[in-house]
Amino acid sequence: MQTLPIKISDETLRDGEQQVGIFFSYPIKHKLAHLIAQTGIDGLAIMPSVCEQEAELVKSLVSEGWDGLITADTMMGKQYIDRAKECGVKRLILFHAVSDRLLFLRNPQVRLASEFQDKTIDDDISSQIINKIRQDALDVIVENLHYATKVAGLRVDFAAEDASRADFDFLVQCIRSCSPYIEHFLLCDTVGVLTPEKSYIWVNDLLQSTADVALGVHYHNDMGLALENTLQSLMAGATLVSGTFCGLGERAGNVAIEQVLNGLRVRFGIEVEGIDYNAIAAVTNYIEQMGIRPAAPYSQTAQRHESGIHVNALLRDPKSYAIFPYNKIDVVFGKWSGVSNFQYLFEKQLYNPQSRKQYENMRSVIKSLATEKERYFTAQEVLELWKDGIFE
Image 1 (tube, rainbow, N blue to C red):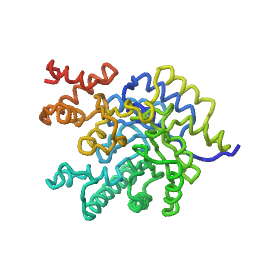
Image 2: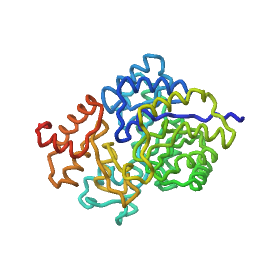
Image 3: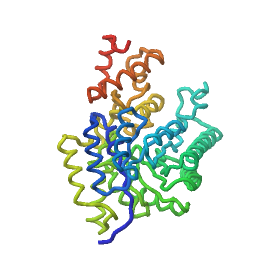
Image 4: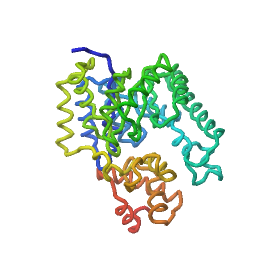
């Protein structure tokens, strides 16, 4: 049996819990963290900026001596980097979109320009604008990577959101620009559009076009191909896998870590250095005993969205986080939700716009209720709460 120093980064407690219908209580997350740590993975990611409970979990695990393992998933912004450091972590995963589709939606100047209202990247957008949004993104990424590493003194991986739909040359430029600051550049197939053949060629070509940066992969399972895409990427030279146990995650979930580890072992005769294979069953059994499993690829259930970041994009571009046009987008509300969730409900579905202040109050109330009751709320339940005056 061959042993390789592949890194495994776990996202069960962050991306996994973003699966609609999952709410891990504090004790469950603490227990899961310990079970996952026993497997010998390289990093265990949590997002402390989501709510105070997540920050307290990070602080607790760090105080127990897991500071070398716990990684903070962190949005761009010095305030988020500082908050993560205050929790005691030594490692970050900073993330930012790299596809033209998402960059066009999120560029602050483009969003405010009247000529781009109600437009997406599929409209007639000039090359000048596309070059601008790419350069703006690169400037933000490099500025934050510099701050996180050189000022805050943290170890950093960069997660390139929607990398599988990014322009290849721009992606190469991103990798080269990030290389002085990061340990790994994570290629994210955020909406699960890769195929095994493309995965191998893509990773191989990127490695041929860049140098001095280790590539990682973070693949979603919308088309049921996340496992094979991940294995082919590893065969092409990727050295880090980011996933979740049991394949939990948004829509149809992430690649299942236990499948990657055992797939390498059985199919290719490769064991991952440092992994305790006997400890894996304790994690998967614990999750399965709760009756949790990811939604099936292509299913309507996999079109449910709770993440505020995703719903914000879906408001203006249905193709941003939904690749199957025949499925209806279903927005729900919980601790991962943002103002956009309520905006989507009242403006896209009810045609009854509310003020920004009202949306912010709704978000605050729902986050508190979701944490207290350990559940999410459907659109109908939110509407009933609104009629009952709970948000006033």
